[in-house]
Length: 278
Image 1 (cartoon, rainbow, N blue to C red):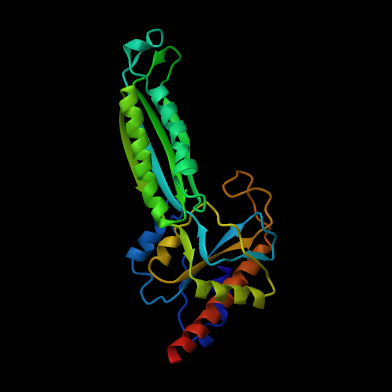
Image 2: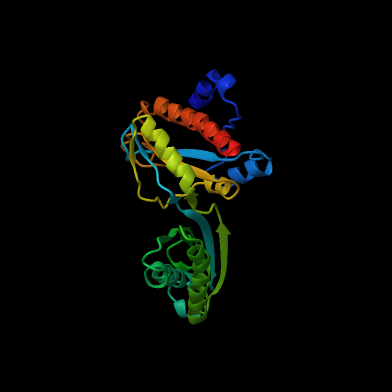
């Protein structure tokens, strides 16, 4: 909103159109798709995005070309066994033992099947089975996430997961269902626009660093599949990371962020007009 206010003051001299997207439903990973489907990127030639970064001080901005944030996928695994009394496990098929083996085997995907030069994460984040102490349940449910930067790695991991799940299923006699839900791809910053973003940051005397790519995700990447784009991290001097219940920002970062966005838009229009006239 601050950037919109600053740009409105210069509207008559902009010589172009700036569209501001407030990233609806970004956390559900499909808000950007709805923006695109609604046609809000039609005619747009370049797009810039920003995320706060609590571990960077106010006045510091993290900018790099190439991968900045990971692709985000979700998975669910259902393991169906045969319930029985805990005293006679041989009368049933234990889904808890099977789910435990699946969880442990999934840990070998990154360490033994993915190149050490390719970053990837496979995390099981939710396990649920049973509701009492003396019954082996019929079913277990696992849920988790896969994070990747490279498209080939992203494509490879679900197949490896399926192979492991089927192997455990055959070995222990359970039945399994594997569901994989692709989310936003990795944020891949355009080099030309990233160099331009660095130029604007230096013009504002911001401290520019090349950040370590984050395994967190961003649906801004869907916009980058449509048009060239660049995404940056703005330092906010926080004491806790994203999604922590005590998360907060140093509000001195707000006017800096607004000014950066406004100047970025203003200068981008000028650059695009120059390119068009050549």
